[in-house]
Image (cartoon, rainbow, N blue to C red; front, top):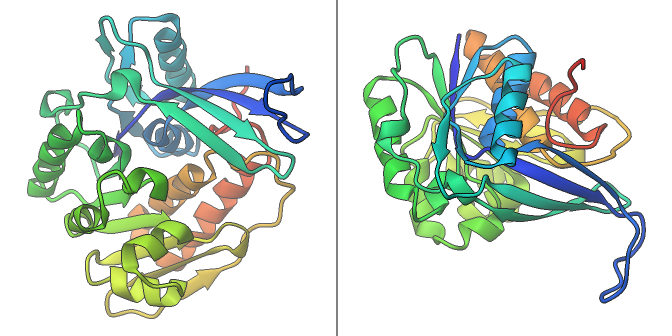
Length: 294
């Protein structure tokens, strides 16, 4: 098994703020930097947990680019190394409140411009993970769609995470629903499911989204997760109990766990449980990547 991951690689600058932010004055915070980006996160969680992963990585010719690529090597992630001259590596400012909830301010930087030329030889890949960010980004959209069509022609299953509602609003509901019809599995959170389905109930949302994609997985945070395949019954699980420190990257960790297990035998319930385990591991620490030994 080997997963090709398409999407962004970023440098996350995380500020954990334990008090309300007062505009115009200092607010004490604990600040750290880590690798980020949905596709890079998924690839890292896969590789650390024993599933080979290859990331299409576009970075700037700056220190941040060198840092995030070196971190991929430490995680054991195979990757391309497209260095975009004159561009900055993508950066996300992440504010984490006292409850562990995060607010993000992304700058895609060198990730913009993804094209078919970035696609590696597809022999040996078992599945493709695609985050919504290159499709939403107008500078990457046409290239990402070309890549999507190419991997579909090769018969590789595509697992798609559409990204946040705030980002999806930039392209509109009809466009995103059209993308869903091109993939095999959609993994999304409850807010995204409501937005894309027009249904307020997650069970009804899953039924509606099944008209577009053959397998729908809905992440529900502290309420666990649910999934349904066409022609099969809905399955649900509870979240793994853990003290939440930072929710950044939890959905990416969940996606990696789901993909890793689902690729083995297609068993949805086991895949949900595996995703929940990795998501719990993620929220118990700062940052969106798994812990690795120094």
